[in-house]
Image (cartoon, rainbow, N blue to C red; front, side):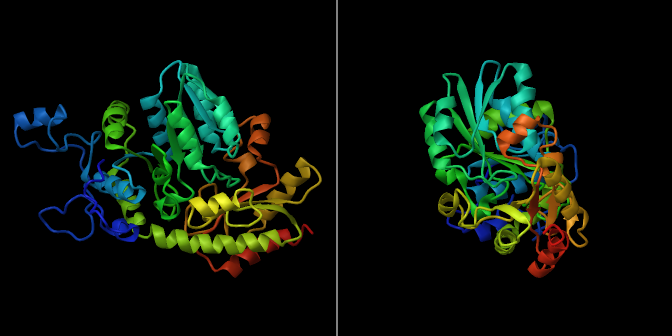
Length: 403
């Protein structure tokens, strides 16, 4: 869980391949995969101290694993936090955060443009346990401020958002949260620490779906929370031990190796996404393109300030006269793909496309979708590493027949 093994002064690219637990007695150069559910203790007294938390040492697979620790240390080093806690998925990380920090009567302010499952989890599921919440426009700092109550304990933003790539002012939200005695959590899934470090802008907690860019090749499910060591040990760890929201050693090892190429992948895919966004913006069948790296993006200046590149995800709307036609046209573009993948995941080396209104945001009410700006003609593109001309040619196959 701790990031203390990371050497001071090393740069992100070096930490991505070096931060990990110490080598075993065998001196392996590539971090080892430890597949074990239990650990032999050196003595009964040492076992008692370890189970009591008085001595470092592994006790049981639900409480820790060396491979998982390596992944946690590496991600903490990249995010610039003291510690990290890995979980079985991105949504389990958010659930762990909420269970650890909130109780009946507490209040959460969150972006209405967040991932659909996050909106359902906080706005509906936790409401059953007496946790109140208010959804606000992602980019309206005044709305965030107005929504804060005396019982507000957490502000939760996702930047850029899924799928409209809205960018929020992290520093401004951090000030609002701290002035109200609350915490700010930021979902950094789209940008990753390769492009953005929320902790440097005042955030208290960073959430991740490691399933996406941290893995980078669409192989495993994973999640993580990055925060102070005190918060991880005193808040997250007890709940994780009792709930079992743990990451398997194999999945941790896959993500650990994925982190080694994170910086290279994010910069290459961001450049390809920018090229595709420019091409789409000029296509006659496209009504609008959502990408932080475009000058036409409403938060372009803010994204340039907070992020070192625009990221690898963009969305676009096809031109249509009504929602029914928009949905049919979007489906037509997706159904004519021959090279790219119709797939709801993102963060892969393969370019993936999806229709948010019927997938990631399909379980929301129409009012919630409209509030989040999820139109029926919207298509999300998670740009991979294919040749840009091949990506454009595959999209043009469907788009050109709409004009």
